[in-house]
Amino acid sequence: MIYDFSYFFSNQMKALLHCNEKKQQLSGILNELNIKSKKIAVPEQIHSNNVQLINENGTFINNDGLVTTNQKLILSIKVADCVPIFLQDQKNNTFGLVHSGWRGTAGNIVKCAIEKMILVQSNVKDIKVFLGPSIKSCCYEVDYKVAKKFSKISKIKINENKWMLDLHKEIKKNLMQLGILELNIKSSEICTFDQQDCHSFRRNGKFAGRMVAFMGILK
Ligand SMILES: [Zn+2]
Image (cartoon, rainbow, N blue to C red; front, side, top):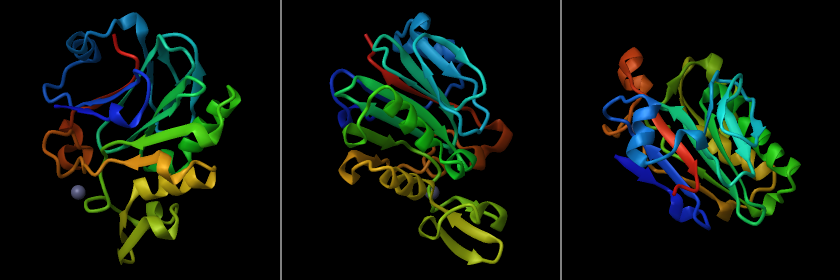
């Protein structure tokens, strides 16, 4: 299964989530999608809030998000319950892809991505953001230590040490605080824990595969 969120973006920009049911390596998925490896940019994710501005392909250490103005590049990230965040400023030809689990969300990684876009002259009013499939508040139980890092609107208390967390809500709040327009933010309804096509770390633990998100002009 490949989810395609390109409709939300403009020009020829593609925003895809490959569910990777066969647990292929990245190279296998690139072959399947007909993407040349010299175009691909891959962060070596560490659950940080670091985002890097890049202008070439390759592997990038110590970060969980990439932003570029290079229309020849295709950005990628791996997820299994964490939120893949797709960003585009079509006026300024800037785009980004971010991995935001609870650590990245608590560290406001999306803000770091927007700041990188502003650095290359994007206007917040022109930035569109799609929050892709992730574990949703229906299934995302966390303890107090995690819950306390999030704002009231993004969590529901079940008991003292059991909370249901809504990462999308927290990310949307963070985006709106930065001046991103509500109409330019869209959230996928898919919960990766419930959706059997998706890999879910919470559902399958160490046996979970990884899905791969892509953003860029594929041709
Ligand atoms: Zn769910």
